[in-house]
Image (cartoon, rainbow, N blue to C red):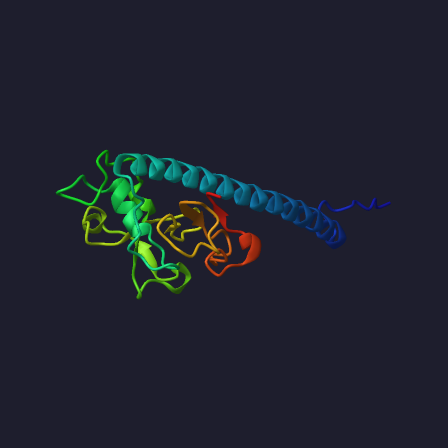
Length: 194
């Protein structure tokens, strides 16, 4: 008499069930990681902006003016702010009397480059030579890889789209679109000093 032995292994249905369970768990984890990353980036941008704003106020106390008054109304004046806060003191550079007011991570410094990759919106990381050259316009990158935006407001006659009283510093946020300059109410996802 023969006894039938069942072979070890899984049936196709069992394998499909396990794969489905793993897929559901992976999507739940991925959603949590994405949300955590978004909140971490927003917190980092808020901290950066707060630190920059406090140093702009310190620069104003030292000089009696805000950097960037020479820029046009909707133009990002961050290069003037960069030189004021991070540049060398005069006569070697364009920094304020107490410069440098802050330190920067070299990896976070951007320069304009029309030939840069399309997803970088025309910006790339600054080279070593560009980092300390006051003739090169430099920007600090926000957590999404775009430059922070700065507008000097105090000397402006027209202040309708600005949020601050003396200056605005902000990140264009995860969508990398500047709704603040465009005058969008609430500025969608822009994160600023206001």
